[in-house]
Length: 378
Image 1 (cartoon, rainbow, N blue to C red):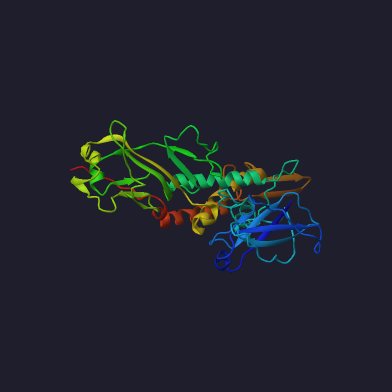
Image 2: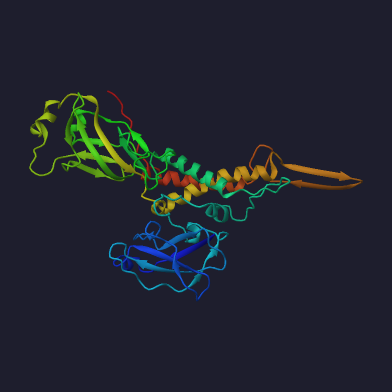
């Protein structure tokens, strides 16, 4: 398998004429180049990304590659790039090496196993001291990365990976079986309806969505206490969304009056009565793809994933071991590690990362997560 890294200079100017990248392959540098991408696998370009990545699974060391820009609607194509060799699958891939971007139709990953292995664990050989000298695999590193990402989602009470929430989804819709968004699924999670509260309705129809940051709202409907549809809030232009905090204000546009004279009259009929499950929202939360996650958040998740990995790697090297000595006929040899029988072998780096994580959370906790409020009754 070959990995191809494609850098796009002056991306804004390129996007004025083209929207995808084609990849061509030949058996020699001066051979005949044939496209190995197709209408479904050509690489979409976006303004925020300068480097793109393509995997040629059948590729080998003899293959050469060229790329071109292409407009998928107007069928306009640029000249092909200079010929380049494909790099082997052993090449280091990641955000640290500026050659990873989320694959088309997938969210991607907050970082790659190579980011963890060669950046956050720099200088540490993740090889166990067993008979087989087992090495930690990419799948194991990816497990720690995914676990650390979910830990930060829970702690910051936000969604990092893209999730699509639907209220009362139809049976015909396709749900992601593993909770991971990818192209072709209709939703990842089922959302509960929101209660109708007259005090919130009087405050410009304020509603706080459960998951943030919000990418978009696809459906917003107000129901009566007997569950008849009263108002399509989204299509009537009532929804005013603050994406970062997931806060909604429902306020009419055009000439519709607000307050006691609100239209349609069906809303006023139930105004002042609090009842459950009055609002239903379908919306998308998280970051659009892994390329758009803020660098600071990516970095602190990497440090947390590394602490998880280091604890396991350390035990694989010297589990429950602090010192050892051997004596024979007056000759002696001793060895002492930095760990005790109950502490981690790489405790110094783990402690350093933990301090950096704590400092980051103290400075950024409420930049990403919700600010807690407490109320004192009088």
